[in-house]
Structures are given as structure tokens and as C-alpha cells.
Length: 307
Image (cartoon, rainbow, N blue to C red; front, side):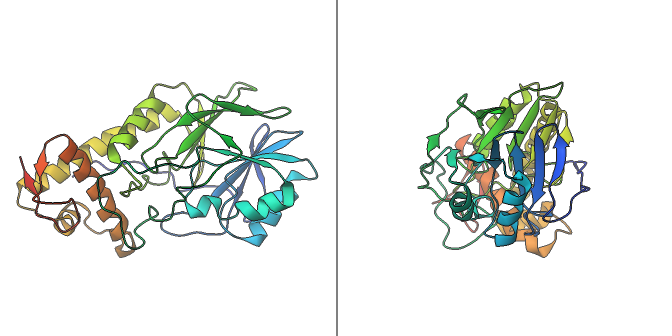
């Protein structure tokens, strides 16, 4: 059994009301709570003169109006996208219509996972836009800025291939990171194939571990300190989960449902599909390393065997 992480499940917020969480950084929480989004999707406004929005959130007219109201007449010149899950980008067209801002993000991508396409929803992974074209395409190390703000893009794939984290240009003592859905304090991130890929996710955790950010403002839930240390804890957790899955197979589990039943005891039934996809992501990573074998395409019901 993988170890239990210490999650932070408290946050101060009120739907529709911006909260200043750092100089030049305010947060609005969209009213779309769920087992996958926690209290809701976080939207951030950065800057004091001209503004950027990080993740406009879901399709919600009240949330869009709250973003514009929080700007207080200051121009919103850029909209930055961490990744194209619907709860982060469905509100983009409405906000663009109200602001005329430029969009910035990773853009179109192709899948690298070997897991077959899913025919329906499972966690978040079946709700990404693989063809989105931002005005400003960002890659690792690219920068974008406004009148009194600037960010550097950090490519952190794994949750999705297009996932970006953003490092805010330092303006004080804190070095602020916006890690999107890659590392959150309230729960582990969903890694759901074929959009999610475990090998990429682990490599992205190692990338964040090498940084010296002092505080993180994630895509869901409250802020947390020492992001590198948190990323390391999540990496250890994933490695232990990987070991538990392999041990389950060695003990006779031959399909994903059996593994989930063994290592996710007492799990909320609503989260079983997401847990199943996470196990599948680990199995793909094990198959890539030659630790397991399957007689055909990797799936939730294939006959697994340890090598």
C-alpha cells in the first residue's frame, strides 16, 4: 500500500469574490465543485495595471462576469491556459468576447500514450482540446508579459500533454509558481490515459523538484509552500503506488478492477473510474520498463502478468 499523503483541504474563498493572495495576484474560484475539481476551478488575475488571467474556468456566465468585475476597469490583455481540460477553458470564448485579450498556451498536440482511445468519459482525460491554437504558442522557457507582470512557461506534461506551469517574474521575496493541475495540495492529480502519461508525469515532478519556488497557487484548492518538497513527496507516493500495483499483480491480480479493489480500499465509488485510469497509467509505465506483459493491447480488462 502506498503511503498516505498529508493533504491540505482548507481554503478561504467566496464564490464570485476575488481574494488577493499575494501582491499583484488575486484568485477567483469557479462554482463548479466536484470530486475532481474540489471547491472549483481556480482563476488567477496577475498584475496591477494591465492584467493577465490564468485559466478562465468553466462555461459559467457568473464566473466570467466576476473576472471582469475583479479587473475593476483595468485591461485584461492576456489569457494564459495551463491545459485544455474543459473545466479550465470552456469559459474562454466568453471572456475573449468581453476583453479582446490575446491567448497564450501550449496549443495543439498529439498523443504519445499507447493506451487505446476511450469511448467515453473517465476522470477528466477525455475532455481535452487537442487542436486549440493560441495567439501565443508557449514552449519550455518561453516568456510572456504585460505592463507590470511577466511569466515563464514550464512544460509539465503528464496530466495532459499540453500542460504548462507558470513561474511569475519575481516582484518581492516570494517566487510564485502556478502549477495548474500538475501538483495540488488537496489531492493527487488524475493521470488518465491516453491524454495522461505516467512517465511524463514523473519526469515533470522531477523538473519541479529542481526549482526554488517558495509558494504555489494550483488549479484547484488552496496555496501551498515549498513546492519542490511537495513535488518530491508526490513523486515518492507515485513510486510506492507503482510498487503496490506490481506487488498486486505478483500476488495474482490480473486486471485493473482487481488491483483497484486491493489497493484503494474504502474509495468513494465516484472516484473508482479515476483510480482505474491511474492504475492503467502506472501499468503503461511498467510495460514500457518491461516489468509486466500483456497478451494484446493494454486495457482495463487485459490479462496482466509480472515478468
